[in-house]
Length: 339
Image (tube, rainbow, N blue to C red; front, side, top):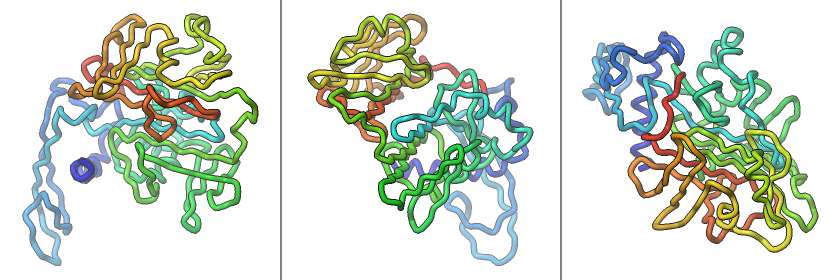
């Protein structure tokens, strides 16, 4: 599966590089025929690839390559990639659902931000976008306002709003994951559906008391549930309750006996969870997002993680400082991206 993913990235990434002259998100698709699945590209190259006839030459050779994109590529529409990015410092998460990160507000001054940016509207609060050119994740981070990344002596060094966090310094830890794997951002190329987590710890996140607290996000088809709503606040008990907090991240507290994540879901209205040969989530909050989602169903993706670590809700007990992310996505119910 990893091999197929990297092959797809290489093929699509090469194609994306030839499209650098195209318009941005809104103009990439052919509105009259959005289901077009093949494109032929002529290019001049001296590079030998597995997709063309192998030849040895020191001269420039004209080659024609037929490249196909398939509707089966999950969510990949007209050379436009999406994924998720979380960036937390001692449990406090950067809010990317702000105008300062929106392409429409920064592209004129910094055109290269089209390579890695965020949008308002159809996207979830943590959903990044990539267009026109394949970039490394390091470059993607450096394109975001107020954020920078470098590598020094093999250690991650990240800066956020003027404060630098050096992973090689005593007491500071910096981890960077795509999905559940540690990555080197200087080598890892951004690809569709990548889920990144940049986590900085300075040892200041624990409250040091008997109570536990953390953050929680629950996404259903690009819609984040609003746990600040009164129905969720009323469902609170001593063992688990949501505190005053603003979207897109919601603070919880837990006192007394430890509570499992599955017990939390049982306590919340509109949500039920069970493990039946994989995650099964039912959401009944109203609207098009209602339904039962099964991880084993084709095309359905359900993620339950504490930061970048997968957890089993039926056995995992909440710990102080946990940042829980639940992601439920089924393409037949998800809205199309507008950008």
